[in-house]
Image (cartoon, rainbow, N blue to C red):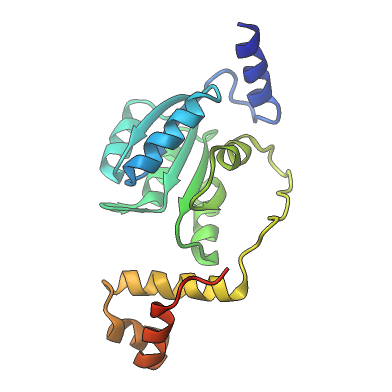
Length: 193
């Protein structure tokens, strides 16, 4: 009991006015990641529900809007921002974090406008998620210890466009305005650090 109270106190420090509600909805179509994160967040004192699609998540939100949410940006049946929007429509004090494998500024801005409190790149660990969910409004985020290099950002952008084009090299090269052979060489290399 004493240990549980210490964990509760740790979570409530810096928590915005949500009282004792520790309901957390995690939405991700990557089942192993979803399971690991759910277990980790339960261990940090949250009452976790999970969903693997936009449709499933929105139906859960209609039954009971959670106090917290961790939502993957790209889901098999749509955009995770639709889940954040559904949560904000039913509960304006909810705190949502968007997770994505392909970060970009435009989607981060959209996520924040829809009510997300943070935007984390995958793979994010449970400590990063907890910090983002419980950070007080206006509290500054410490800069990352190992920020991505410009080469890595460029490589991830190319990978994202390549996936959006269903792995079609010619279409990807056209959209990126680069020569097809140059793109093939980039895709054949490993990701830069």
